[in-house]
Length: 271
Image 1 (cartoon, rainbow, N blue to C red):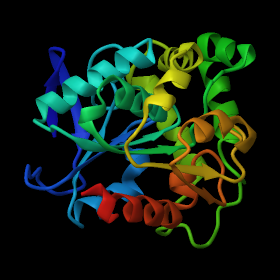
Image 2: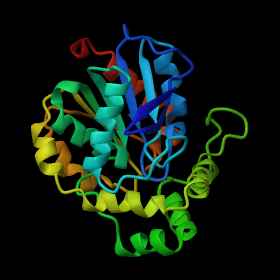
Image 3: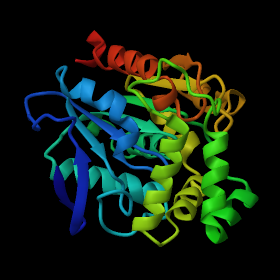
Image 4: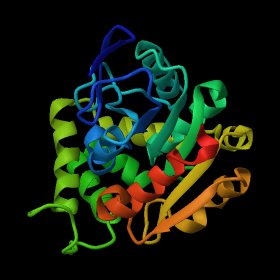
């Protein structure tokens, strides 16, 4: 599904179903140097079980045009304009990593547009080390490799992974390489700088009143459990689910993540 946002194409995967304004909408927001495909194992189920799905490509990522945005606030404003373009008045926002900050900021900036909030692999402040920032700026492939290693709980993939030949770690690395190939403007550095520079998380979290779900990976080295306390304390009414995974929890534990997300999205309080 292509929409026009800020004068250029914005792509959203709809899970194989036509968009139907009569159904509730779930918007899936990816993290740094990724695209909509990181949600492939969750979004199709949502689309075939009663939800509109908009799994978006952020500007400069995947099939969406335009330059990558330099701040979380600018990405949040772009997201609100995308919702306008899709004629979506109110939606469940599901964000992973950088995408979780975009979802959080949007819930703060436009609370009437957000019915529920699901934050995966989230933390605040989402600081990026100077060494990793510099690698993203000057040696992107090294930065991709570092992130890929730190984002997975193990290089050994489990037999229960979906589909013959499915290799989460290799797939994640190749996706980041592809984003770098199609956009030479150092997207990873821009994304990391946006995460590093976001300073409104405390106020945004304190303002959240809608039903909220956190999903954390027990083995997450990028956003470890001890770093999540500010958010979980500020949004005290939130549910917290932990899965046995690293930062790339949607691929490492797809069923557990889907079960938690769909149960949350389908809860009676969401109506």
